Length: 203
Image (cartoon, rainbow, N blue to C red; front, side, top):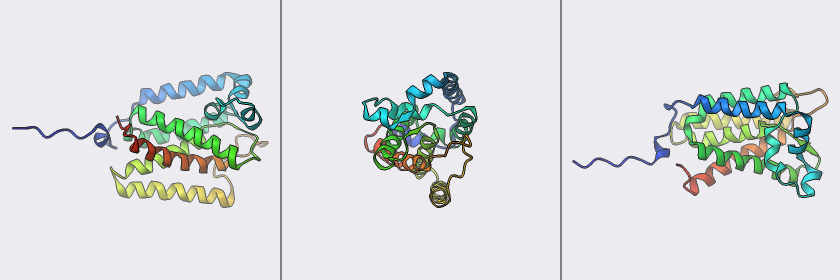
C-alpha cells in the first residue's frame, strides 16, 4: 500500500491548531521592554518625516514597535492578543514575520508618500489592521464564511473611521489616532499575504 503524500505544511495549518502562547508572551515582553526604554528610544525609533528625508530609514519599521504611553501600549497589546488568539494558527512564524515587515514598510511608505501632514507616528495599530486583512485572506482556505465576515468587519471599521474618525480612544488628549495608518496597514497586509503566497514562503 502506497501512502498518500501529506499536503504542504500550509494546507495543514488551520483554526483547529493551538496558538503558541509562549510566542505571544515573548512579543509582549519585547513591546514592554521597548516601552520601558523611555522617551529617547521612542524619539529614535518613531516614524519621523523629517528624519526619513535625511536617510534614517530604519524608522520605516521601528516606528510600529514603540508607543506614546502605557495606555497606548495596552490598547495595542490587547489587540495583538485578540488577533493572536483568533488567527495565529493560520500561518507559520516565517509567514507572520514576512507579513509584519511588509505591513510596517507599507504603512510608513504610504504615510510618507500620501500623508505629508503626518509629521510623526508611533504604534502597532496599523500593523494589527494588516494582520486582520491578511488573516481574512488566509481564512479563505479554512472557512470561507468566516473569511468573508472578517473582511466585511474590517472594511466597515475602515469606512467608519474614514467618514467619522477613529473608533478607538486617542492615547492622549493632545494626540490624534492616525486612521490613515489603519487603511495603509490593511492594504499592506492584504498585499503582503498575496506576495507571501506567490513566493511560496508557506513553510
